[in-house]
Structures are given as structure tokens and as C-alpha cells.
Image 1 (cartoon, rainbow over the protein chains, first blue to last red):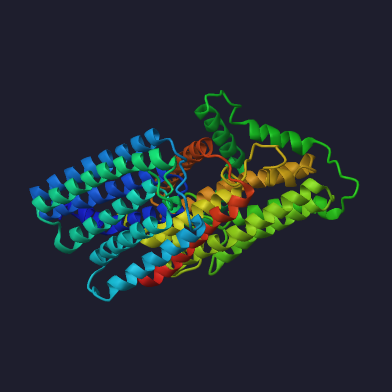
Image 2 (image 1 turned 45 degrees about the vertical axis):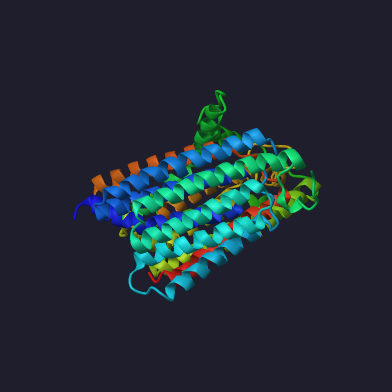
Length: 220
Length: 313
């Protein structure tokens, strides 16, 4: 077993730690741009995991999926979101309804919850358990970000984090979905971002802000 | 041989402390496109202060003169617990993580007393802020160290280092990542660096540490400045010993020791660069936002401790 094999196997388990850290940091972040960079980093970790899986499984399809994730989630979407932020010219805070310190505490609780939930079903070996609980934690943290952040862009980011979690869950349980489905999901995501970008412009033009907690009155 | 090396480690930490401070200041200046003062300036400053006359405020008591010395001695004692380039320390044994944390706390307590003693309003303000930061940063530091102690099954810093060196680099656990994040935040608060306290400011509304030492002069100021510089060195060495010990000398051959020393120098150089970069790119937090910042450290540290149970390693 060469050094590359060992490294690939370790990446699968160790990278989960980095995913927890990004989830916690996102809960603690105060600016939308910080969250976007963290999301790009999170996707980069996911890409490394996909490539590691591809290496272990010797499947060329997985390499293609990894390249697609790299292109879309690490480069494309963060760039688009940052461009959107510059064009929208609205305040850059995430619009917390729960304070950042408390958010980190709650996020820590969610991570523990995902660990205890996954533990009930898997007790065999550690690598998959950590990765799978990281996936559940990402799903929960994405949902948490969507619920507690009032800016429209943060809700998009929450959705993206949630999608990252689902992707990781698929990766660690079945070593990746079929290539064609993967393409469909990524295409879906790109269209979703496009629509939400247009929608964000419309909200900004109608209400002069992007705070969804203040969208209470009808404006024509 | 081993004992001599341990003394060398403490002396190294003590004597290079002003140099590290000078290097960080120089790097910051270069990042900000300034020329900066020479890296040896902190030595000249301490030497100048040591030769100067000690001026006492009118209402000061003996505590005022005692405080800086106690702060210096406690910091020096704390330095003796940290392995630097080889994996033992001068002092060590079961439970020394607690002694280490509370030696820092004792030093801060006496600096605060020094600030309160002359009865100036600035000193009181600085002392109260320092007490707030100290109270909030003590718990995360202790918890993060405890998490590592549980993993390594020993509560001595040197033994934790020795245990970590034996581990695989790729095998980093969640506990290490979380504890490192917590300790990094605490380190900023503990050494009075930028997001929490600005070491270069003399603007009364923002300063913490500088407000406390306003009344000090001559040798007392030299002791406080030197202990503050030493603290930065200790905290950097501690982070390296706990989280990145690979490269430290495990055997006492000259070659291994030289390699360990080279690793130490390169790692601390990297940390100085990182610190200078962070300090040049972040703004100081409002005083009321500091508890929030440290709350994040607490959450991370608590999670680290809980994870030691979850990860069963």
C-alpha cells in the first residue's frame, strides 16, 4: 500500500474535521463575504474527498464528478455570489436573529446531535461514521443558517451548505451517485442560484433591502 | 545533559522574547508598506528602561513595586513548563496544565493590582477590562488543554507533546482542530494582540494592557514589557508543542537537537508572519464585542471536551 493510498484513506476521515470547523465558523461569521469564502473552502474539502474516493475506487467517473464540483461549487458559485453582493450594494452583515456566540453554541449542539444520531445506525468503523455525521451536521447547519439569518443571500448560502451535506452523505454511503444524476443535481443548483440571484435583485429593487424578516407588506 | 538542555530552553524563550516582538513589529510594518524600526529595538528599549530611575506615584504602596516583579517571575516560571526544541520541559509532572494556566492568571492579577494601586482612573479602567478578558479566556484555555490531556491520558504539557509526536500527521482528530481554534482565540486575548487589544495604541478608549501600565516607569515598566513579550513567545511555543510538535527532537543527539531547533525557528517564523498578517488585516473589536469573541472560544473548547468522549480515541 503506497503512501498515496494511505493519504487518500485518511483524507476521507480527517477532512470531516475541517467540515465541522467550517460549519462552526459560518455560525460565528458576521459578514456574508466571510460565509461565502467559508463555503468555497468547504466545497474544496468536499472536492478533495471526492478525488480521494475516486482514487480508492479507481473510477474515472468520480474524477469527472470531482472536477465538476471544483468548477461549480469552489469557483463558480462563490464568484457569482460575491459578484451579486457587489452589484446589490446592500449592507454586508448576515442579519443575525440569534447572536453569533449563541449560534456557535447551538451549532456545537447540532454537531453533537448528528454524531449521536448517526451512532445509532453505524458502530463498525470510525472513518465512515465521522464522515457521515459530518454530512448530517452540514445538513442541519445549512437549515440552521437558513432559519436564523434574515438576509436573502444567507438563505441561499444555507441552502448550498445543506446541499453540500446531502452530497457528502451520498458520497460516504454509496461512494457517489451515478454520474448522470450528479450532473442533474449540479445543473439544478446552478439554475437555482441563477433564479435566486434574479429574485434578490427584484427584492432589492422593490424594498430597497434584502432583509427577509422585514418582508411583511405587499408592495407593487 | 537533559537538565542543562531544559535550562537552555527556558533561557531561549526568555532571551528571544524581545526579538520575536521586534520581528512581528517589523513584519507588520513591511506588510503596511512602512520601513519599520529595527528588530533589535525591543532589547534597546528594555535595556534603557532597566537603567532608568524608578518614579513612584504619590499614593503608591509597596504593591506597586512588587507587582511587575511577580508578573515577570510567574511568566518565567510558566516558560519552564513548555517544551521548545526537545520533548521535555524543566518542570513537569501530573497536573501541570493547571499550574501553567494559573501562573498566567497570577501574573495578570498582580499587574492589575499594580494598575489599581496608584488610584488613577486609567489604571482602574484598564484593570477592570483586563479582569473581564482574563475571566472569560481562562475557561476556554483550561478546557482545551483538558481535552488534549484526556486524549493523551496525561496532564503534563511535555508528556502531551511526547504523545502527539508519536501520532500520524494525517490522523488529526476533531478534538485537535477544535482545541486549536479555541487556543488560538485565547492566545490573542492572553497576549493582548489585535482583535482584542492593540499593543501599539495609546488611545484611552481602546486600550486594555497599555492603560494598566501607564503609571509604571523605569525597571518596573521593563519587567512588565519583557514579561508581556515573553508571554507571546510562551504561547507560540505552547501552540507548537501541543498541536504541531512534529520535528521536535525526541533523542538527545546533536543532529536531532539541531534539527529540532531549526524546526522551532521555522515554525515560530511562520507564526510571526501569520500574526503580522492577521494583525494588519483585522480591526480591533469593540470592548463590548470581546465577550462574544471569547464565547466562540468557549463553545469550541466545550465541544472539544465532549468530542473526546464521542470519538473514543
